[in-house]
Amino acid sequence: MITASALATCIFLAAQTYQVPPAVLIGIMKVEGGKVGQEVSNTNGSHDLGPMQINTIWLEELSQKWNVSKSKARSWVRDDECVNIGVAAWILR
Image (cartoon, rainbow, N blue to C red; front, side):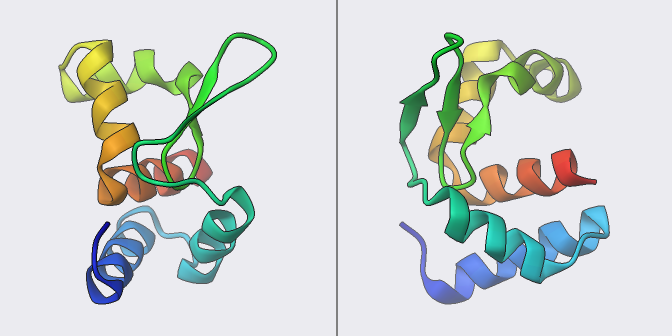
């Protein structure tokens, strides 16, 4: 868990980077209600990861974009709050 100040920094950086309103990212986070390290199973066999509940369908594209394995991309999205928020903003954009 990161501090409120660090969380705000992550949200505003992601919002600025992907040109999305920070309030929308905060709203997504509240609605999704995920937590760092969390994986929620879906009926279609996919999983939702981390605070913003990023679906694992994005892992292939993210692993290619970051030039890392899918398992590494999965752990970053699931376990790093700032990465998770950044990915949500990227998807939203």
